[in-house]
Amino acid sequence: MTDAFDKAAELFRSGGPVMWPLLALSLLALTLGIERLVYWTRAHAPSKARALRTVRERWGGGVRELEPKLVHRTGSLYVNCIDALVRMGPRGAGEGLESVRRRAERFGGTLSFIITGAPLLGILGTVLGIIQSFEALGETGQEVQLPVIAAGIAQALVTTAFGLTVALIALVPYALVRGSAQRALGEAEALISSLGD
View 1 (cartoon, rainbow, N blue to C red):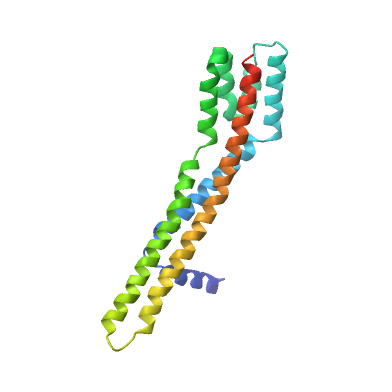
View 2: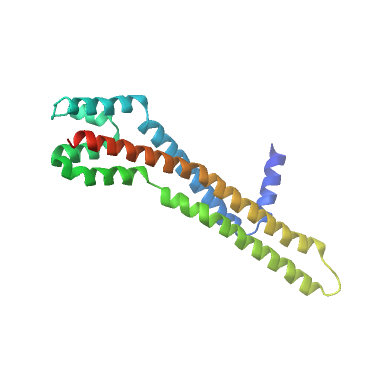
C-alpha cells in the first residue's frame, strides 16, 4: 500500500507546479459531484414523487388550499414553485419555474468550468515540460543530460493525463446535473400546467 502511495506521490511531483491547481479542481469536482448526487437522490425519492402527484390530484380535484406538510413533502425543489402558483395563480408560473431552474442547475457552471479548465491547465503543464526539456538541451551543449530531458517530458505527459482525468471526473456530475435539471424542469412545467388552471 505504501509502495503504491509512494509511486503516486512521485508521479504527482513529476508533473510540476501545475499539478496543484489540477488537484484542487479534482477535489472540487468530487465534492460537488457527491453533493449533487445526494441532492438528486433525495429530490427524486419515491416519497417526493408521490407527494407531488398528490398535490396535482388534489388541485385538479378542486382543492385550492394545500396543507403545508404536503407541500413540504414535495421537496425543496418544488416548494417555492407551488407557493408562487398558489399565491399568484398563473402569473406565478415564471417565478416558480425560475426557482426550480436555480436549484436544479446549481453548480452546473462550476462543473462546466472544471471540464474546460482542467485540460487547459494540463496543456500548460505540457508546454512548461517541453520548455524545460529544451532549456536542458540548450544548456548542455555537447553533453545531453537525459535525466533532465526525461523529467521535462514526464512533466508534459503527466500534466496532460491528469488534466484530462480531472475533466472526465467532472463530466459525470455535470451530466447528472444537466439530466436531473431537465427532468426537474419538466416536472415543474407539468406542475405549472396542472396548478395554473
